Image (cartoon, rainbow, N blue to C red; front, side, top):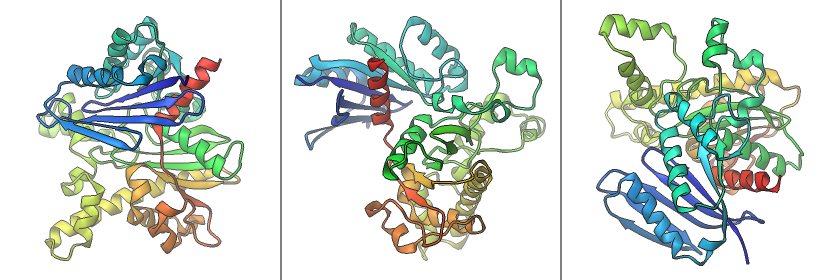
Length: 395
């Protein structure tokens, strides 16, 4: 009788869940509860190609109860042997997936100030499952763990040593589960044991990672997910002196500045839209007011320039680069963004094949003849979590 891993990816307003065969890692069930804590909470579950969707107001506890109730109706419920949870911030405590204990939960809780939107939701998922799957091991898989291989000369900030030693202020990096999956998938595509890649994870959150011999050696996000690239609502890297300037001139407190930089900046701050699809529509639509179209184009330009500048700076780590990889919602689906970024990298040896770029869903490699390799791959964080469960239990 087959056995399964249940995987949870809990966000602040959504819960993704999947079921994987513990041997083959074939996904047999996938579900999503979206818009939690609204009147339009949607539960969608797909099993064997059949999708069931229902909408009703649900809070977080009610959403989990719905998921557990559905799973208990399935024949596979009694064959679940482990539950994997995505945890965004593991800090300096964790460099790999771990079986959840009281000590692990306590350490995750101490990191809530560094990931206030994510770690509380991740913990809620773990604790709910502990109540309903009492004898089944819970496994925490950390977004930061993949980046624990980054050298000290890169992860340290030039601040007083006591801030590092006492408060562990350093670069941690995020999207590690995605970057690790992509590194493995790209190496497999190229028949490599371990590859040298630059991975651009471009979605509502964005990061670029340099991966050498299968290990992360630098990444654009830092102590928090606010650093680095321009994102949907996050500013990315800005001059830290702006913080004190906002305090002095606008009398803003720390919470107001955090809110501004995390939720009101990025693409949203530049043009009023956080969704790149809507921005592209503004740019391409001749009926849109000229000022709005110009703001949208500027947002695209700033986004593309920032991504290209990180990619270019990471080339220094490689004698031989096996490929530049685009992934996540924007990276995988926006031919325009890929083109804009590569246009800024032409002096670094990159050129894109226009036809392949437009049909990236039907191919993987989209570079022009004579260019460094450029690839488009779909990420699969949930499968990576299931694989981490498989490896941990095997050991």
